[in-house]
Amino acid sequence: MRTAAIVVLLLVVLGGVVLLFSRSAIRGTSVGAVTSGSDSPTPPVTATIAQGESGMETLPYLSQTPVRKFARPEDVLKPGLDYYAEFETTKGKFMVDLYEEQAPKTVNSFVFLALNHYFDGIVWHRVIPGFVAQTGDPTGTGTGGPGYQFGLEVTPSLNYDKEGVLGMARTSDPNSNGSQFFITYGPTPNLNQQYTIFGQVTEGMDVVKQLAPTEGVANPARGEARDKILSVKILTRAK
Image 1 (cartoon, rainbow, N blue to C red):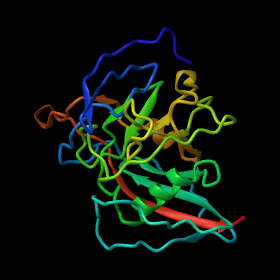
Image 2 (cartoon, rainbow, N blue to C red; image 1 turned 180 degrees about the horizontal axis):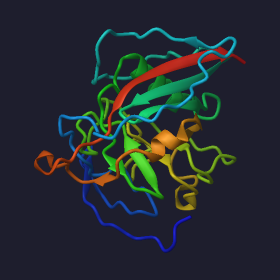
Image 3 (cartoon, rainbow, N blue to C red; image 1 turned 120 degrees about the vertical axis):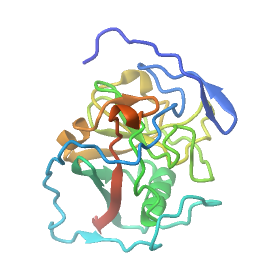
């Protein structure tokens, strides 16, 4: 989908590690935009989310307000269930099928954080059309995380071969997964087998494509804003 890769050198610090990030490869979490304090001015796009499917249930939250620091994630996944995430953003809603069998540690961490409202209000700090949309950092800078890290989970049969693939951002250390994740806008083969794949957008990819492009700190004086995650709901159904 892309022509020649455009390499962008950025200094990134996460857990004391300085990294290089390029458009053709994710070498860790990225320097991104801080929130401007306002939502995107573009009207939301309405997406049809299949919550009404037979057997689909929404899990209750574990906390009433956002919690952003933990020593480790609790074990929240239950056997025999398929897990899904419904995102509500300033541009609309989209649904993700989570890969709890292929990436159990990653999905457990994501579900745990979502059930604690961790992602509520977090900006999409890096949105590069044709490449990825990245979020999951409460600081909005590309350097934040949940207070813990865990290792890479790679499944040979899963690759970044289409739009809507959900992957974990990390540093050069394969044990540095945290809370930051990205969604691909198309095939990104340079990322194959290097970053955990833990889901796929199944509905509302048009909403993801509406996210405002950004790379760097927003300037409210110029009327700039960043799209945000408003909430993440976790849904399940029996396998």
